[in-house]
Image 1: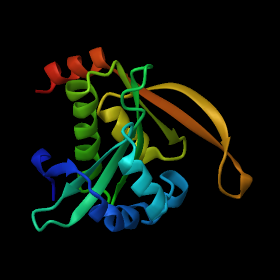
Image 2: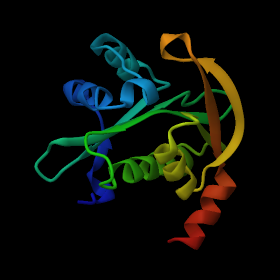
Image 3: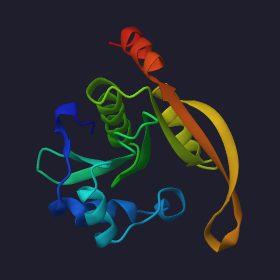
Image 4: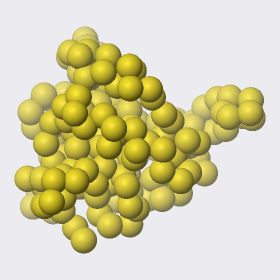
Length: 168
């Protein structure tokens, strides 16, 4: 089941339980991370954050995306989290597509960026398919203090506009 972009809407505090359920899906602890209700409430209240949810026709939340660093002087917006309840149904693609639309068409940012663990092949494939490119790699301490490689992927406003012209 694929969702229509019009079904992606700003999240509200009433959506936090569903957002937290998405974050707690299998494998997301190591790839997405988890926040508490209080952290999400603070994020939603923070003017430098934006949350969006993908709603199914029945109103249930299929997934969410969180942006950070909105309005900061660097003019590069961080896609902090994307998580879906069911993978391989197009929800992640739709959410990231909407996030890029907001970042470039609504907020007028110069670039978008995100960090993804190098072993997250599905995430890297999705981000690449939507036009994001690897910019750098760094080592971080992950769960259990094991070192993990984090890939920073970016997209410029010009690349976004070119991809829109190529794939209207």
